[in-house]
Amino acid sequence: MSAIKIRNLQKSYRVYQKKEGLGASLAGLFRREYRTVDAVKGIDLDVEGGEFVAFLGPNGAGKTTTLKLLSGVISPSGGEATVLGHVPWRRENDYRRRFALVMGQKNQLWWDLPAQESFKLHQKIYRIDPADFARTRDELVDLLDIRRLLSQPVRELSLGERMKMELTAALLHSPEVLFLDEPTIGLDVVAQHNIQLFLKHYQKVRGITILLTSHYMKDIAALCKRVVVIARGEIVYDGSLAGIVDKFSGHKVLTVQFGGERMPGNLSRYGEVLEEVAPKARLRVDRGEIAKVLSAVLAEHAVDDVSVEDPPLEEVIAEMFARSSDGPAATDLQPVGM
Image 1 (cartoon, helix red, strand yellow):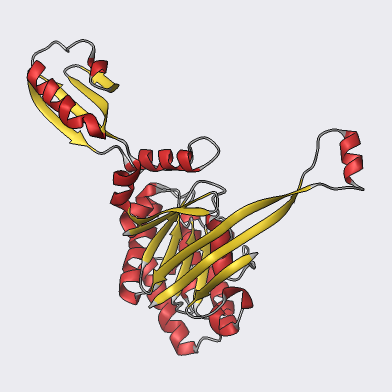
Image 2: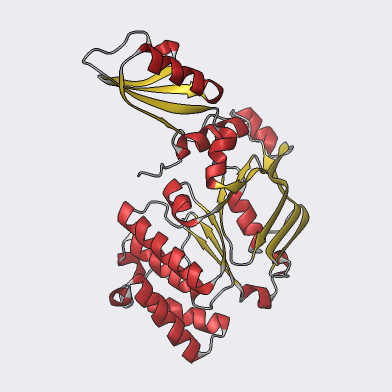
């Protein structure tokens, strides 16, 4: 059964076009010009209960707007969506108790108070039974190893510690659906890894449905089997992470370690030379030419070792973003190895 069902969902904004110059600014006080920006353009999506789905796209693609629509923060311009059978923008109390939204760049905790005080407030807001609240809080606190930090003001915590507190607060009422908008943004490698381990364990144990946006490919590779890519407000891919490489990459990387001490000349006749450090060379070769090029290299040169690999995943996705968007390739995508 689909936990999330979206049909032709749309969200448009009227944006004021401010012109340069004093005269134009004064004229704008009396007659304003607007343009329409389509943040989400008629997307269709089904997410089954218990799935952990990555929602990828370049900046401005419509990811966060979609999460805000599904959490009822904003209302759509058109289309339909249900989450757990509820229409999100009706903002029914029953629905509010069944989902949670965590945004990596927004705080839901009181800045000058210890996190445990915010947790108590959440208990009152969601009307959580005291025994259930204590049991769930203790479970999350132990899983995230933050018990020693509960009495410390939130403003004194590190970014990674604050994100652990944000996740704890979001999960106190045991939601069935969790929307995560870049939860590891700005975190160091250790903090990212700890958040990934927690999310993977919690989702497996609780079986909740999670929709995750992130620019860190390590998050996606560690957590999600299914990837949905959105660009310019439209879904351009829905499938496995590995399938992105097969569908959107037109080349492979050929690595050759030549025998002897001398490198052959004019390697560019085989493909684009990515790296050349004797006695090894890395070449970018079109997928359709790889068999012919490999045969030619082996026939014409002494070779000690050879390998054929797909290009790095982050490179493929960046190229896909570039082809799907009007602007240049996304430069804020963080690779798997970082």
